[in-house]
Length: 203
Image (tube, rainbow, N blue to C red; front, top):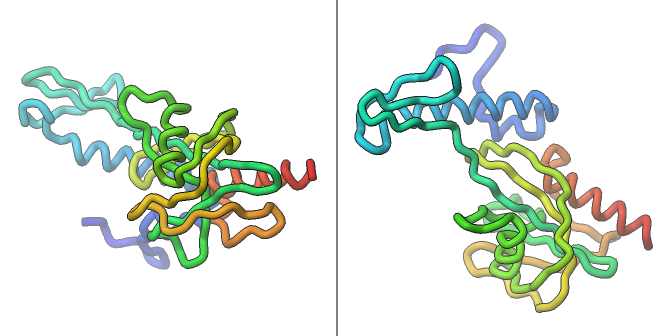
């Protein structure tokens, strides 16, 4: 249980502070949350069940019986903003706030490169094929322990077919007529703003 907060303060879930904290404080809080979660979930060895011990010389928990070491892990996730002449392809998950659209995203599978993941996720989620994949930026994302890696890519073929259960709606939007977008602190919004700004400037 969490200790009682000091007078005049209160506890809030990190997600609730997503649009309240600035980038630096949100990143710091996210790092702390991920490390605490890792420490709590690795108190016992995943191979033999023995209680683990914290190593003093590095951030790891080690099993004194079988010597298995557990380090904090990140799950890489790729984000893709697909573009074509004067338009971007964005979609909405059933879990999004009403009316909000964002870039496509999905987790990297074992044996995949980031580029292979992007092409697979885009084709699975909306049924289109892409090319000219270009890196944009990355952002630690503690919901759960992820690293979002954002790319821009170009449409080459295919008509939109939203993946049932994953994508509620997906559409091409003209850069001057965009729907509700994610918070400005998110990498999704920074990606969309940067690409849309570039496309408007070239128009």
